[in-house]
Image (tube, rainbow over all chains, first blue to last red; front, side):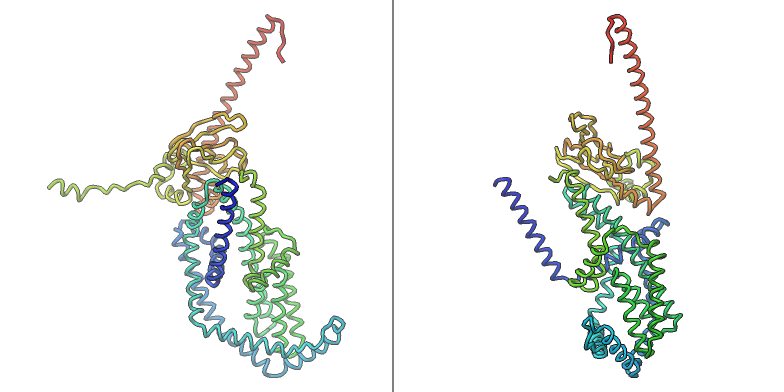
Length: 345
Length: 183
């Protein structure tokens, strides 16, 4: 067989293997999703394990301590906040049923249709839409809770994967690198190191940022005496993980729920103001301190990848679109820079 | 009967890991205790190279050092293919890359089948974070060895300068006798 034919055969086999791998991963999509979530959480917790190791603990002991801590926090959170959250959900339901919210929403609808008619805003049917959305959400939640097997499996599998990734992750990485041919070995090590440097800081920074924004939002809403402060604040923190879209997505439900609960716009205005202040604090104080600007991308690129991620993979896709693009960016940059340096040609 | 009791109370001979044995022989790691050597072993990469296989090329980005567990490695200066050194079991090379990412100054080529241990910069930095005591021990030893080499290089440079000076003087004397000048 000629050299060129051999190269074509190699290329064909590589494409065939890659296609099979993609088909396999898609067919076990649920497990892959769980693995991604667990791997991300393990990655975020890694520095904590390393810190405990630097204090003289073994990796297993450090991992066990982190897990015990998380378990304790979860128990405290459930005991403290579950009754509060349940009360808040009931309060939302009462607000909807009282009819007060309906009047306010109908007024809002009229104002919007009057003022923004030139933009094609007509026949909004906000109340119907809200009602439909709440029914759909309720059904989904109910189905999810009914599917108790899936819920328990997720609750067991995710911590299980996190524990072993945290404890044996380094060994796993080493064993994977062992499979790389000698020719690409140093390149792979360099690439993994650069990816870790870029992504580690970004992901941990975003996680810490979301946590702080969540706490700030909860505090602000508590000061404003908003009844659902825990739910709204936690949602705002989580939504903050999605660039650009997140802060708005976090505030909108809060304002909508406030209108439904109180029946007038005053509280909604205060909430909007509170969220604006939280965003100001986030952008001027928290982000420059905790979020490393290592994934240096143009805002237009960030927006595009967030939309594409959401379109194909839902919320998880939106959350992971920026770090995933960061990985692709590093791989492409390093490959181009080192293509000749490592003599791949 | 004696052999019976002898067998029971014979101290158990622990079979030593060949990687630990190899690491112990390396000056950078010779002061580490068993626990530290085991921690180091966990981050060391084992590689096998065929005869004639290039370990790294001159000009490649340096990522770490290699220790020869078994085999012979040639260090070659590329443009002229000049053989700079031939290293064998227990010897190491590329240790400067643990401290900076400057390009490799020569090519390393496996002369025979080589079993190598790779210790890389990213792993050393990770170790410094997780186990600063061990990390600092290794970095200090590395600094000591590099310092010794620098001293050795300085001595060589002084010696060479002296030789050049003597040669110039001798040539100068010759010039005076023959009446030619040297540029």
